[in-house]
Amino acid sequence: EAFSYATKSLDIYMKHLKKKENLDIAYTYQTLAQCYASLKEYEKAEVFGKRALDLRIKIQGPVSHFVAKSYKVLGTIYSSMQRIDDAALNYHKGIDILTQIYGPLHPDLTAVQSLLENLNINSVHEMSEK
Image 1 (cartoon, rainbow, N blue to C red):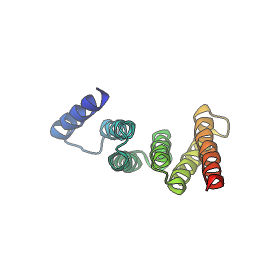
Image 2: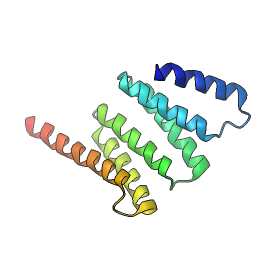
Image 3: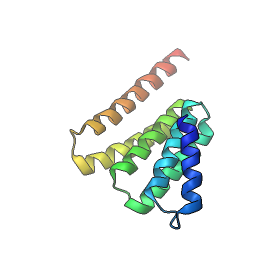
Image 4: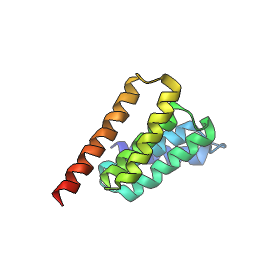
C-alpha cells in the first residue's frame, strides 16, 4: 500500500509542482527506493535511492541529515544486493556527515555504525565459509 501511495504522490508532484527540485519529491523517491527494496527489486530501489540522494544534495548541499539518511538507505540496498564495498562506502559517507553535524554520540550515527559493523561481520563470515 505504501508503494501505491508513493507512486500516486510522485505523479501528483510531477504534474502540479512547477519546481521539480523539491524535498517532497526527494522524500517520495526515497520511499519508493525502500518499497522496491522490500519487494527485492534492488535495481529499481537503487535508481530511486540515487535520485533521492542527488536531489537532496542539490537542494540541501552535501552535509545534511537527509543526505546522510539517503546514504544509509543506499548502503542497505547495496548490502541486500551483496555489493559489500558499495554498501560500506555509502555507510561511511553517512557516518561522516552525521559526525560533522551532530558529533560522535548521536543515535542516528550509532544506528549507521551498527549497520556497517554487521556488514563487516557478515562479509568476514561469508569469506570464511568459502
